[in-house]
Amino acid sequence: MTPTLLRIATRKSALALWQAEHVAAELRAVHRGLIVDLVPLSTRGDEILDQPLATIGGKGLFLKELEVAMLEGRADLAVHSLKDVPAELEPGFALPAILPRADAADAFVSNDYADLAALPLGARVGTSSLRRQAQLRAVRPDLTLLDLRGNVGTRLAKLDAGHYDAILLACAGLERLGLASRIRNRLAAPDWLPAPGQAAIAIEARSDRPEVLALLSALDDAQTRLAVTAERSMNQALGGSCTVPVGAWCTVTERGLHLRGMVGDVSSGRLLQAQAEAEGDQAEALGKQVAQALFDLGAGALLGR
Ligand SMILES: NCc1[nH]cc(CCC(=O)O)c1CC(=O)O
Image 1 (tube, helix red, strand yellow):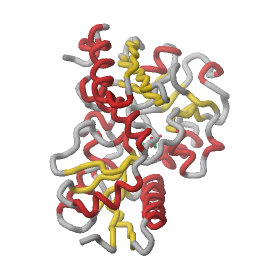
Image 2 (spheres, helix red, strand yellow):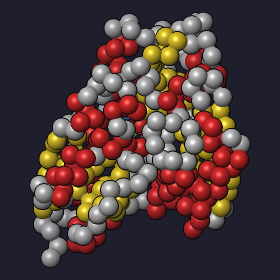
Image 3 (tube, protein in one colour):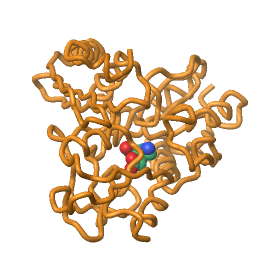
């Protein structure tokens, strides 16, 4: 029987709540009469803020509590930033919808400097993302890289308190929170690669709930799904963890898919880059092909395998 109520499990950060509200509004718009409620939950990834994500167990930390809520019948779906969703989902779960992508660029945010090139020698830049750190090292080996965790508001407050000369965030998150005015400069492809799936919102649900999956799939954007499938397939073929600096960017045109991939080394600032094109129905194979090209360039040593 088609459900008349859908409950969305979400993290409690301002960005997570915005994304869940956005999905709720879209669901109400496409399914007239459907009741959609939010179930805000705390996750381990939100609670442990004093350690880098890579050391406390990675991205799955943000999903676990939301998945438990779905398994226990307290929620019907969960809304995530796709870049926080591990390449391999927990068994029994699916991503029935991936929403149209926002701006996938990273944002250079600073109160004193217009862009990376304007930073003085040795300037302090805050980011806990290994991908951002490796790309920073590659263009500015002199910079002092400092850890920076917490939600978007916390990170901006730490910048404003003077702990950093600049910080890097995702443009998409700033835009969703009405903070686009904080973006001083966009760090964008092909010179600078985002995380696989960056700027796409994903809906997760139990694979054994066909009526729920059918309602949710109405929000799926085919073009975004193709692009992020290629990016996530590459990430998975490289080992799929968030403890290595990996960037990916796939564009979709009438001619097909174009995937760029990057594996970096934070200490040396060395970046390995590869790219390839494929037909629209070959997204997964394209991801594996670019991963193989990166291995051929020596990515294995950087990935510790
Ligand atoms: N890791 C936290 C996270 N997960 C998704 C976004 C931004 C929104 C998106 O990429 O969809 C952010 C914040 C950031 O990186 O600045």
